[in-house]
Image (cartoon, rainbow, N blue to C red):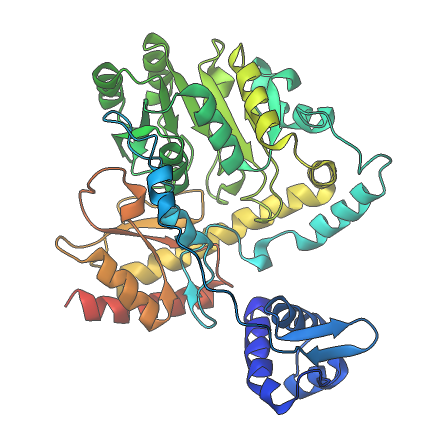
Length: 478
């Protein structure tokens, strides 16, 4: 059982027993709880912390945990209806209100109930994360002189140099800005490159988090269809001409959600088309460290072939490590870097130095390359397991492309299938999936689901999840 599930189950059990104690009454000791529920000390500590956060218990170091006294009734809420007018005050005939819709992102961030197979995840399962290596790196970083001091606003020079080396000889450390993960980098880039109300070209389908960023900034995402070889360049050129857009956002490597890799023939075309349009290409290179064992030699980032400052490159360590190691970077050349730097400084000053130092320790250790090799092997095994199970048990779900990198499969539903109904039925059957609708900024051509094979415990759980999904499909697709 996962630690998170154990914590939730113990917390629920303790809640049910609280009425046995009067307010201020002492709960059993941690040792007694460990023996009674056969859980670890860490699980007990986290369960009690959860109840304390909910105001149900009070913990006193050295004394134990006690049932909290009832809280006073919350005062009645006031009238907040005025906010609807104020938040929409910037809407004009040209500009829609800047509503922030995070629903597509929350699907992959929300933790389903205990016992549900998580095919909706966006990060590596804890068993695939380099937890020991990260802990050792953090411990070493904590001993560095000045680790709690203010870092350079652009980031630690050594970390910027490490990121630059991965982009070839067109990019130097001076062209790198350290960010708090890839999402932060994308947010900074879109704010820097396009004013509110402007169109921004995006692959279709594409990452919902990027669509949420664009809409929150008041931008208008315009879809450009993609296929198994990446964005269709003839349609990209037409979209630039039709809209006057000055930004195109893409994921050339293991695209989310399709897993496509931009072909060698289309790579120079994307750069040429953008340059002729006087536009930037925002390259979200989120999955470079998630190549599968059979991926072969990966194509270079678009930024490595760009000498004219067309590409603003975004990358991160988060996907290949842990959702909490939020260290990423922006790479750009020319005057645009000054704007990117200014926006980041205004928004957040800088990325905390201890986190940067820990990242530098991690990528500089022998454990880093071992971890990447292990992840590559595991992702290939999990992908093959899920692909075989789907072909065997769910042949009606079309898999147009089997990726050689990333952490998910993109499946098309039969014509006329109700995507929302399948999502709900799957959750009732005990498996969480990511519905396809949030990946489109216009009407989708068909229903889809995205299934992650990286956020589960292993092949056995993948087999079980597909079996449960079969039951949901029998309910909805019959």
